[in-house]
Image (cartoon, rainbow, N blue to C red; front, side, top):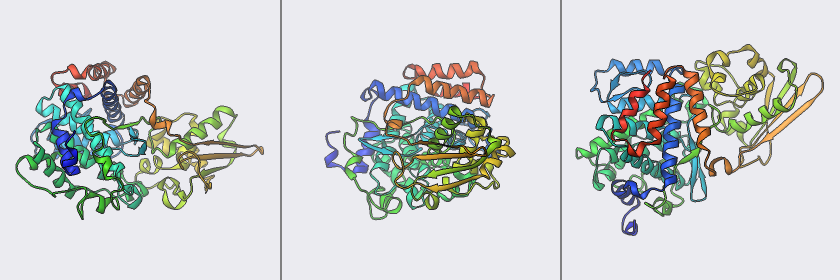
Amino acid sequence: MDSNEEMTAIEALSANIVDTRFEAFSKQNIEDAKNRITDIIGCAIGGTNAPGNAALIEVVREEECKEESTIWIQGGKTTAQNAAMVNTIMARSFDFEVMAGFVEDRVFAAHHTVSIIPTALALSESRKVNGKELLTAILLADDVAARILVASAVGPIQIGWDGTMSLSHFGTTAVAGRLLGLNKKQMKHAFGIVLNMVAGAIQSLWDGATTFKFQGVADRNGIFAAQLAKKGWTGVLDPLLSRFGYYNVYAQGCKDPGVLTRDLGKKFWGETYYKPYPCGMPNHPAIDAALALVNKNDINTDDIKEVIIHVPPKALTNSYYAKPFILRDFPHGDAIFSYPYTVATALLKKSVGLPNFTEEAILDPKVNAITAKTRMVEQPGGVGMGMGVKVEVKMNDGRELSESQGPSREWVKNPIPREKIIAKFWHQVDFSKTVSRENAEKVLDQIIRLENVDNAGEIVKLLVA
């Protein structure tokens, strides 16, 4: 957009959402969007029966609502707002969805795609949107959320906000504004409206609470904000850079306002890290280290004397992953954000997938016998972007075994082969046993040819068990 210099950042972002056409995207952009759609739908299938979801759906069904959009897997229709919310929460349930990416040369860690895609599909179903417009809305929304995060002086999580919830509000508002046909002025007001709905406390992850996956509220709020703007509501004039806008309230300022508009409409940023394990990403190096140990050594977990996990600097005080592993009212929330549990289950099962995070697996006395022998210490300096972990196992026979693993920039920079994303999709279909393999195959086919689909909402019909 050549006229960005004449606009404020929020005006430029709003204009870009309204004006950009499908032809602006590269072949790689389109492939990235299709991969993200595949991953999020797969995560919703895998997470449909996760603890807490049945209760949420029951509450939604108790409301007398206009029937606009489908609740995936479980079936039944409700408002687009509620359907998007429920579908996102199911997809978020195992913290397994695509996350993080690059803007310019900077890594950003986020989970906004898991809100953007269910919002886009819910509105596509209710409004009979074609595949090109669905892809356009998703790519623009991903780009907005990524730019806003990277410009932040401090990540939301560092000051107590759960960025997966707070930042997603801008992504869902963008996708809703595009699909509801807002003009530039209405789009800007929609962002100003949604600022007053942003929320999400990181305490949920410290407490292992069901509310860690409450991100779907961003879907409902984003659609609501766009609907209000279309009806004439006004919002904060500059929801990003004003005195009490997003950056000053949620991010201790904006360190690089230029990134909000640099190459806007020419480059489109989005999440690219497809999680190999259904748990928090900082656990992944620890899991890799534990799996390397059991693959290289003959380890009978009954003969383990002690497990020492060397965690990144300051993790013992600042990271909920390094808190003591204690089972509380929601064991799943305790397990997926825990170094001790994820290392223990990797050592015991010699693989890590969705079956490791069922309640039966989490309560297994054998895995808890390992966590009882586990302690954590900080390793100075860290390994690999500060998230590296060393796992040390001391055996009763005197052996002392150790492995270190740390993520590099390649974990997010290099595009993952689609075959791996498809394999992850099928893992979730097989685990869930809800959507038939025949319908799942049709879903994948629809996604591959999405730009040629007249009604993108038709894909949802295949997602009802």
